[in-house]
Length: 390
Length: 79
Image 1 (cartoon, helix red, strand yellow):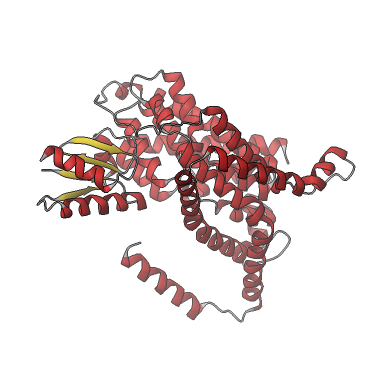
Image 2 (cartoon, rainbow over the protein chains, first blue to last red):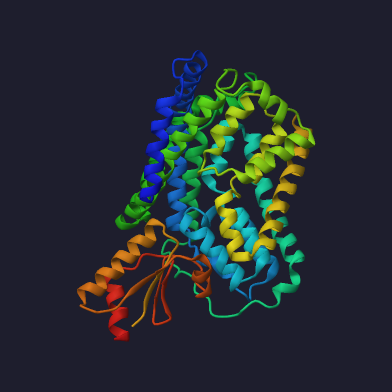
């Protein structure tokens, strides 16, 4: 953070403290909503969902070999493989901001070209494991699933579109050596690593298992009542796995990576929840922005509402995961399902600051094509989802 | 000698820069360590990941923070 930003934050906080009419009943109500929403997250989502998800993200960044994926982005790689890998690899490569933009620029300028590069650029932030898990937990599994499927599909489509639109320029790219990170030798083998990852994911699923809505469903209720025993059993298994298959220093890097994510994301998410609570309130509670506005702009499933959600999402900057509380507030105030998905698909992948970097690497014309493609696709996806799930 | 640290300014890149600077200092070399932050310039070296260290135009490490001894080894070789 530069000194100027710090000054900006302090001045902003001062002006807010000075001028906001804190005694006004509406502002009091909004302030209360902000902390009620923070409490809801602290009680419902942090221990059972976020913490396990952070450990998974840490494990992915440390134990999944990135080099094995990167070879599919080289200039000689088969095109269809490049696209497929680019569309899903966001989930393992984009856990650190150090990776996304340099890797995008590398693929574009030296590697497999504009198509796979665009696919990766989209999929990176959109298929983040943390984001998908959090969406499913807070906003429901349907939206979480739609987000995951939509993001993979979009990455593929956006990549193909870009490659078709700019196929002529493609041939003039400079060739040259590429350097990928060294692969760390995995001495455990894929099976053991797979079991370890599966164990982590199962802990997350069982710990976060929600009370079934339908009390007559025997299977779900049985799982629900046994969830803590299963979670405890899985945690013991995890302990055994860690003790017998992993070296001490590996565990240390794992914990360090997890701690790195927590440090980065928790403060931002907390601030995001407070802002969303203050502006929009919990579902069913009034806060600063009147629900009427939200319903008019984003309610239902009209073309206008979906388009507005896509464009707003594309321009806004969401710090990692903050899209979830904001969307929760919006949906509680009357935003439709379709526009919600449109915002989720256009939002995290695009923002004004990253558009500027994209334009610098690809040029204005291609950057615009990339952005417009995403906005159009998100709008369409929102309309379809809203029609199925009114 | 020409030493460059490529990275857009993430924590790992700053760590790498610090290690390289320390290595240079401890070996008593008089070289300028250049920090390359521009994404386009970084990509022009063909690196698929940052932080990366480039010495005399040759890519030495990609996508990880090197240890000080590694850096000293590279510096010794080109010296």
